[in-house]
Image (cartoon, rainbow, N blue to C red; front, top):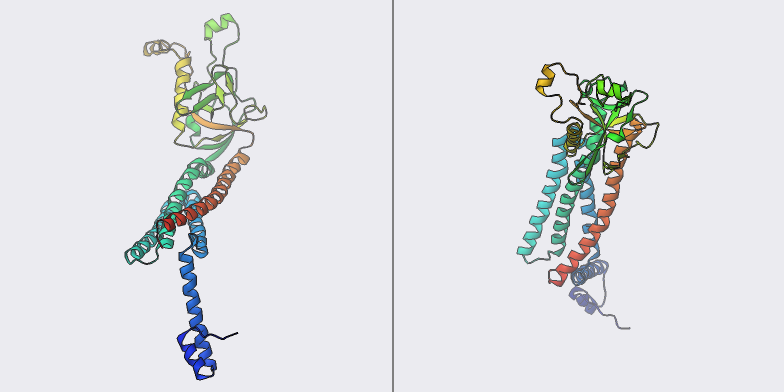
Length: 357
């Protein structure tokens, strides 16, 4: 075999008849540089350079997980400004810096495909992480921490107690015999079906005979003279068939509630309660003139309605809300990992086909 010296310096040394140790190192160094250049040119000719694809598949996932965590965790609830700074402002600065780098390389006609793809997927990670964190926070985390901050009460009697005395209630154990009056369900329909049914400790309909009904009215008004405790849910009732299966209502041993804390849905339950009071109290009953004559109260009122998830064990239910939020976080981070890998590969291929190095 004929020995061929590639680099110019090596050829000169070959002609000199001998390669000394220092000259040999210089030859290998030049060969290494040439090999790196060949690899770079080879990578520029493939749509999926391995190292660049690895970075574009991993760095955005880390940013997505971090942004998501800051937007949904207890850090957001107790320290919102810190969460916004660390979870939104800092990643946005990183995205902006990468965008400027990609723009500069495009202006200099330097290889910019890697920088462009990385900048794009980082912005996607920031946007989706903030959006997913916001949804998780409103769906689970906010409710969990709000209930934790509220008080717990036991032995509440819906027929005697008024809602205005328990405005800070988070977890409630009702008096034995309390139940959800499914037959009194009220439904409000908007973008969904919002169900509300009163929590009672006595019979609501007067069943003491015709004479007693004529004397006291068709309904048994509670001693509290207001129906303020309500079990609520979405898509779990039917007003025509008088069925209400929200939460643990089908379980006879349940007689506790966890306060419903979502501000975006609570107004719909309030409208359902207003529909119920309007249905139970016609316009000609309990008018101002009638009350002036000290007429007996014949209409049920809901002056300070409080909404609850009907449960068997409030402590377990609250813990499950936290766990549901954490499980959703894990599943969405995993889903983003696969989605981002596919997006990065497609962007690399598309820019390669457009001729961007």
